[in-house]
Length: 185
Image 1 (cartoon, one colour):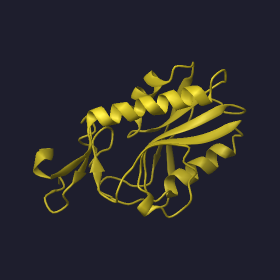
Image 2 (cartoon, helix red, strand yellow; image 1 turned 180 degrees about the vertical axis):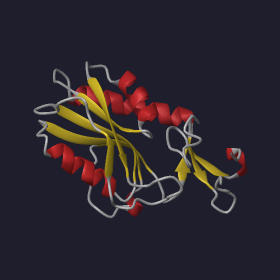
Image 3 (cartoon, one colour; image 1 turned 90 degrees about the vertical axis):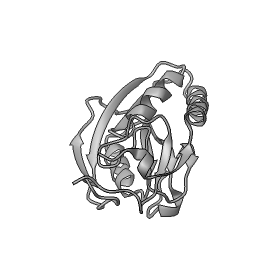
Image 4 (tube, one colour; image 1 turned 45 degrees about the vertical axis):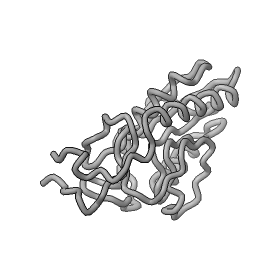
């Protein structure tokens, strides 16, 4: 595995800026759902760090659940458009206020499919909270209610986002210099 310093183009969002924005999102969600039932659904695996920090910043009582979906595969850099649910919710979302917590929205194909699936389960409300939004790459409309950062069309990693399952543990969001990155064999 290559040391990330060898292919680091730039740090797009440092740890302090990330945590400050997550605190703001937590405060806004707490205000919007004060006195209401709230369920956060995290899309695994990239969203785990974001969910963990976000839920610590939400001051109202809430519950969490997880889904794992795939549309990329190891080595792929774009969604195939074919979404497979690898792990489904344990919680019934019928008549619940649900926020889907995502690490990044790119083309929107995967998230659109997940939202369509969740809508069939008749939640009271269904909103999206994403840490990163690559609006330049959007192919389908996605209603984003809470957004951490709009970012340029760059290949990013860190803070839950991986490169072939590595580098998720970094406390910042960084961009890859594609000319210097060597995929592991």
